[in-house]
Amino acid sequence: MKISAKKVKETLLEVIDPELNVSIVDLGLIYKINVSKENKVKITMTLTSIGCPLFPQIEDDIKTKLKKLGIKEKDIAIELTFDPPWSIEKMSETAKAILGI
Image 1 (cartoon, rainbow, N blue to C red):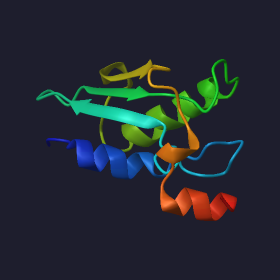
Image 2: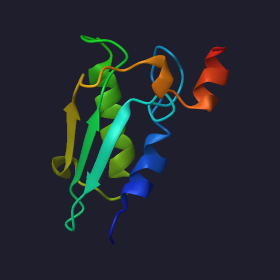
Image 3: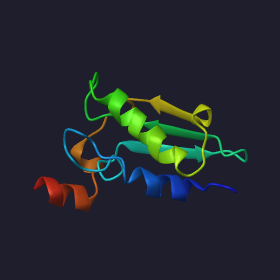
């Protein structure tokens, strides 16, 4: 079964930033999602700050959620980037409302 980037993004809405209690999608941390014909997923994302100690927890949650779609862990690649740097402007209106911004 072919997995779409849209389905991956919908699934990533379930991944909650443990510090802010808002999804990583709504926070604007997901920059790009690529899904190959073989259902290999590459996610380009950022963090709210360089050196965020919670990345391993977020990474594990991403992989756990995507495995439920039938994607093998070896087929999930997560690339961190800080270019462009994250800013509040990248947040969805939902996230801003949750955080009172």
